[in-house]
Image (cartoon, rainbow, N blue to C red; front, side, top):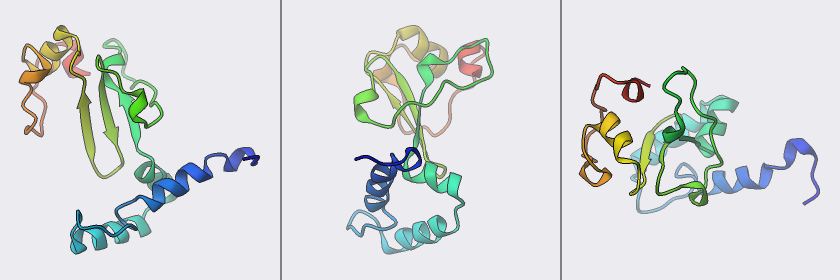
Length: 137
């Protein structure tokens, strides 16, 4: 499409809105949850709704332990995920951590306190507080 610069992402955002649980009815989401989402989306400002409909994907494995800044968010696509990486997906309401199967063992040890990614407790909702730079970051 030949569009002005400010509208180049309009098709992407429209697709995200159409696929949203707030608008699309399905059997996977309960009526109360869908109603809550609709009300929440209607009360969001523009930056919040932008992040809700097109979540941020932050590569955590690229964290610099000596810096206080987060890595730059990458395009939210499954093609961008690497088996050797750890990513944080955040939409303003929920956060999910995606952990590749081949994440370096020292990174997993420093952050989760286990020897491999297969041993991480996926039911846990909190990270351990381990005294090292990677974990603190």
